[in-house]
Length: 155
Image (cartoon, rainbow, N blue to C red; front, side, top):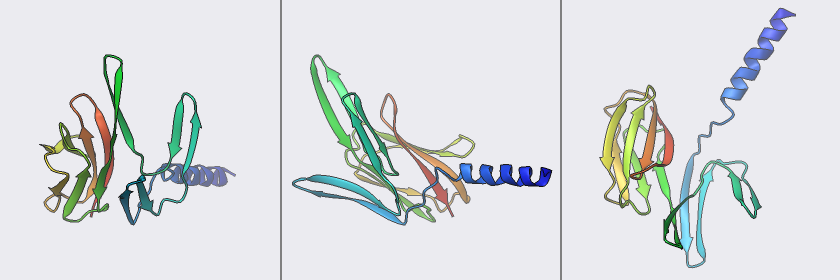
């Protein structure tokens, strides 16, 4: 009886720790005059629920909207940020639609800063070959907040 309870607890713990993991084989953004769409190959389920107060989207790739208020005018910017390949061996590509005023910070799993730099181009290449294998977090920040965080696996 105790063995069955113990095995059930271990099984549920393993399942719950993997529930938010997604390793996609690829992804991209397609744009034409009618709009744009971002997609991930390997993303199995997406759902969007909307109300007059806002919307919630389930899925791996999520767009970020930045709103700035100036008087009564509100300007909305759609920002697309992509990091690939993941897992990475040597070079990590960071694509940012509009890098103006943004920085990236690469942190190790224990939180120490591995690399910190300003984004100046739409595509930034981050050298990863000198880093040990493991898990890293790549944050793309504006001057006031984190825009997007990526969990990067280094092989």
